[in-house]
Image (cartoon, rainbow, N blue to C red; front, side, top):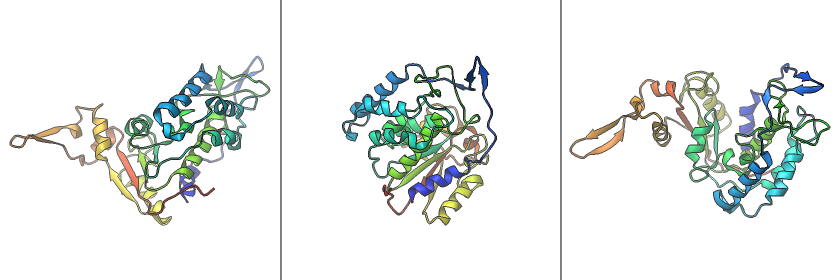
Length: 290
């Protein structure tokens, strides 16, 4: 059930289209994307050990070297535009771990805010805070057909081919994450993103594309609570925007009590920064069935 919900959000992104062909220099394809991150192996193996030893020791013992080898095998020595989700299957199985109920956090267009808010699994556990997600967060990689090395010069973008190593990785990682999610499911959307949160510019609860999303989920039988400018997220953003009107602190002289000015200013905050913390409350607990 949870899996079908998450996939429904992806369907609109998977239109067939004509892809840009790469240029060739000395018989070697030159892609438009940046090449493999230097020192990739050292970075991801280090992240793996940091995760199981410091960030989330509850996942238990994992063989980080074997996980790296499975990750690398998924795309090395292959056409960089023909990487399938099944290629990452062994990697997924070796790095899989439980996501605690009520801690799943889906998001779109607000990566840095999400990671700050989740606080490395302390508050929530978005995909990037899982062992699987930590392997790819902020990194880039690809191989080459008939070549056992990495391509450090360039890698294909989604405009050039959808089934590239990075896009395919996040697809299977996202599907796996959705299957593992259970209890209350949280979704944080960016109402200030170009094109909108879902994607119509200027969204908030009950309006624009967020209303479309709410109605879509209701027809699927979900109970939903939608909250604009969720206070804890608003306070976090105020650390970076202290002079914004919605971050003003008012003082009551007799009691010296301080509180946050109401964020309801006709959407002024939503036009400035990340605004919408949309909370979807599901009555059923979604556990992995497949």
